Amino acid sequence: MKLSHAAAALIIAWSAVLGCIQAVTLEVKEGNSTCIKAELSASFSITYNTSSSAKTVQVPLPDSAAVDTGSSSCGTDSGSPWLVAVFGPGHALGLSFSTNGSLYSVTNLTLQYNLSDTSIFPDANSSDVVTVVSASVGIWAAINTTYRCLSPTAFRVGEETVTFSDMRLEAYMPGNDLSPAESVCVADKASTTVPPTTSAATTTTAPSVPTPAGTPDRGSYSINNGNGTVCLLAQMGLQFNISYLSKSQNKTVQDLVNLAPNLTSSSGSCEASRATLVLTQEQTTTLNFTFTLNSTTNKYHLSGIALFANWSDMTAPFSASNISLNYLRSTLGHSYMCNAEQTLDVVPTFSLNTFRLQVQPFGVTTNQFATAEECQMDQDQMLIPIIVGAALAGLVLIVLIAYLIGRKRSHAGYQTI
Ligand SMILES: *[C@@H]1O[C@H](CO)[C@@H](O)[C@H](O)[C@H]1NC(C)=O
Ligand SMILES: *[C@@H]1O[C@H](CO)[C@@H](O)[C@H](O)[C@H]1NC(C)=O
Ligand SMILES: *[C@@H]1O[C@H](CO)[C@@H](O)[C@H](O)[C@H]1NC(C)=O
Ligand SMILES: *[C@@H]1O[C@H](CO)[C@@H](O)[C@H](O)[C@H]1NC(C)=O
Ligand SMILES: *[C@@H]1O[C@H](CO)[C@@H](O)[C@H](O)[C@H]1NC(C)=O
Ligand SMILES: *[C@@H]1O[C@H](CO)[C@@H](O)[C@H](O)[C@H]1NC(C)=O
Ligand SMILES: *[C@@H]1O[C@H](CO)[C@@H](O)[C@H](O)[C@H]1NC(C)=O
Ligand SMILES: *[C@@H]1O[C@H](CO)[C@@H](O)[C@H](O)[C@H]1NC(C)=O
Ligand SMILES: *[C@@H]1O[C@H](CO)[C@@H](O)[C@H](O)[C@H]1NC(C)=O
Ligand SMILES: *[C@@H]1O[C@H](CO)[C@@H](O)[C@H](O)[C@H]1NC(C)=O
Ligand SMILES: *[C@@H]1O[C@H](CO)[C@@H](O)[C@H](O)[C@H]1NC(C)=O
Ligand SMILES: *[C@@H]1O[C@H](CO)[C@@H](O)[C@H](O)[C@H]1NC(C)=O
Image (cartoon, rainbow, N blue to C red; front, top):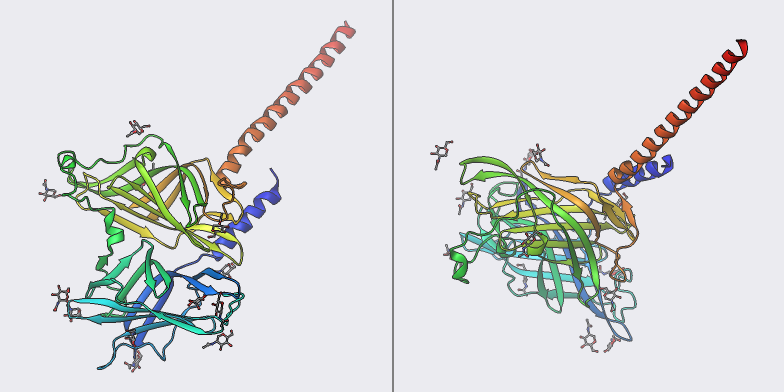
């Protein structure tokens, strides 16, 4: 094993650490107090005309997006609170809010884009600044709570689509930070609530729980993009290590539970610099993976994990997420592989153990994994046979030398007699 190889792996790991991508945070203030705060990732699907055809591009909301203090406002007698984020040359995203005292909601969603920006809209046959506005979008929450929606959620705005994910948002804020109480969106809840009315047959059987431990079976999952081509591939065995308050034992238990691939369905989405894999086991377990690509460095990593679990022995549904992770680092054009067991810590009460893992969230061509970059643990394990082999060879050599010396001595002995 070459030292340069290990050094390169270390450098790659470090650059990935430094290139860690986070969702954008936007705040509207009046004096020293914050009235609107949003942490979110967004991406826009925009169709424009070139001289020959219509073209669709995916535009992510960049890290550099900033609140436009001129047009944003906490609300006046005549106007409603409005958050406007600007990015690039004349692009903007706007959210306006209203409240009736007990609930607040996003009343309209505005997207403005500048077709003169040839880096985003090459060959556009117009140089207009286009503004599209949605009608009401169905983002609402109780006042003094944070609206939370980690699942990617798409909204039609004019002819375009705005997709939010990893979203936490609050308007009419009582303090300067997001309220700890959350209003969870339907998409995040859907997987954890068991609809009691849809099937009478299921009422007698308790919701099934993922199989108890042992090494988990390896599942194969893939995501197709709009035109039917595979854009994300994953193979892995997954094990939850989760602590929760047990109904039967009336105390907090530490439980190891495997995901059963044959009962699990996959869904998700692929965008230019973000890919999501959602694994759902029956109605009791939903696991979200978010992968992020840094298009400057062409490195990607697993940046977010969210788990929703509603197992029969839980006193309350379990929900945990972390969107600033930095696992499974690899390079665009390669897959990431780790045959050894790996532990991905998510929150203190939940970690995920992976077994025989191979993933490729970006740059999948021909429905197959590209060459893999292997994790350090696999490389170390390959090293063990080499060390053992070298040690054995050394031992053989020593024995041989000892034998030869011994033979020479005894030879000399015979001659003196
Ligand atoms: C990509 O990585 C570079 C170098 O680490 C970093 O400067 C840049 O901010 C990253 N880009 C994004 C979108 O995070
Ligand atoms: C904002 O805070 C600073 C220091 O904490 C204080 O001096 C200033 O008066 C405050 N401004 C307003 C508008 O409350
Ligand atoms: C593109 O051109 C078609 C007509 O060919 C027109 O109806 C449509 O509005 C144009 N779209 C944009 C975004 O300008
Ligand atoms: C742009 O191209 C579309 C067809 O792709 C055409 O309908 C439209 O008139 C063109 N607009 C301009 C300003 O040339
Ligand atoms: C959207 O909301 C903003 C801010 O409240 C308002 O200025 C604008 O007129 C609204 N647009 C539409 C089409 O309702
Ligand atoms: C649109 O983009 C062009 C080129 O980048 C720039 O010159 C122009 O000022 C932009 N328009 C607005 C309204 O920002
Ligand atoms: C606010 O709107 C919600 C939903 O329409 C309604 O249930 C609630 O009663 C309203 N609250 C007030 C104070 O009007
Ligand atoms: C929201 O919180 C503020 C400050 O804590 C409080 O004054 C207000 O009554 C609360 N409103 C509701 C609807 O609970
Ligand atoms: C499918 O769409 C992707 C981008 O979304 C594109 O790269 C690919 O070439 C398309 N494949 C086909 C067969 O159209
Ligand atoms: C499960 O998590 C606990 C607490 O983080 C840890 O002590 C334990 O070693 C973990 N078990 C496995 C098998 O990963
Ligand atoms: C559960 O344990 C707590 C104390 O640890 C006790 O007060 C409570 O009565 C117990 N509940 C049941 C149903 O046993
Ligand atoms: C799923 O796989 C497990 C273990 O491989 C097996 O015991 C179980 O019967 C399978 N369940 C279904 C519904 O296929």
